[in-house]
Image (cartoon, rainbow, N blue to C red; front, side, top):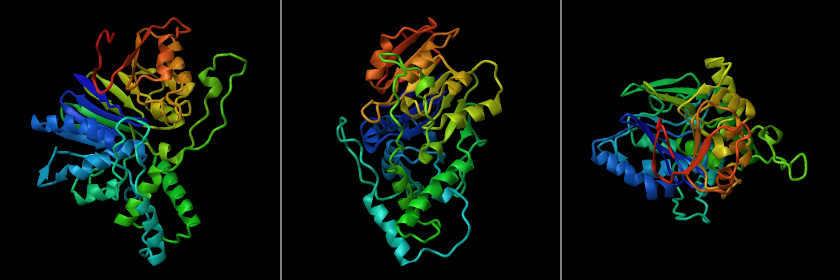
Length: 392
């Protein structure tokens, strides 16, 4: 059995995976996502003797990390956990190798302190239940102080492509991204921005540095792109016409992985860049046909900056997961959804959304250009059982 919940996380991601009794939490949306939905499920799981084999923070964006900050703030100490957590994956500044240097001086510490005082971004107040804690500690600090096994140790190494973790019940997690280079790009961008504030330090690991780094990364605005326009009046735009690659260093740092059991294989893409995913999948398998996964978590909430025609040519599935309420950045983009269902396939595709959005409603009235069968589902915090012969 392989099932998962895609929580209503506003414009964020939050997934609870049950791989034959091995449980994983992948991102947790905003603080309100944890408070309103995830906390109850984890309490029930713990009451029945269950535990989390792995918690993954794919990357340091507010809509992915906020609920994890809330969870680890309240899950207790090693002496008394709300629910046991066997391992955590999270790439912070502390996880990247850095040359030895002198500790920051007073002025540099004050620059970092100013960033820490801003805290983490709040959840969108226009959404229902805008509960949010202005967290004052980074996830790195919480993991270290509360004694979690972090990145297979104390967080001093990063999780990157090629890492493999074996879990109970024959569950294997294969990391396909990010590369260490992508993580270094994010750190270099952070240092570049700090230099503008007259920071002259070397960002040596410390609680203050961890806090300031993660709070800054979580609030980095997305890059701006030119507005895509149809090539002809009233013409339907195709993905190939509007696709422009993501350039966000934060999204490029996403942990992306394949979760495998004896008979299931699921691709979780976080907010990863399409080009990175394509390169890694082609290095694993040089297909003349797409690799068929049992489910694919679509990258970056269905943005046409993160799913390309090339990516869809190397990966396909009867089950696609799209996480977004559509209120920020216009995700998901209809061009991505149409490209998914317009391709021919020997199976019926089922697209699962955690909210009804303008794009999901439009998809319901769409007819595949190749006649391929598909269905549209809205699963708000409900278990999605993979491999069902008929989801309808």
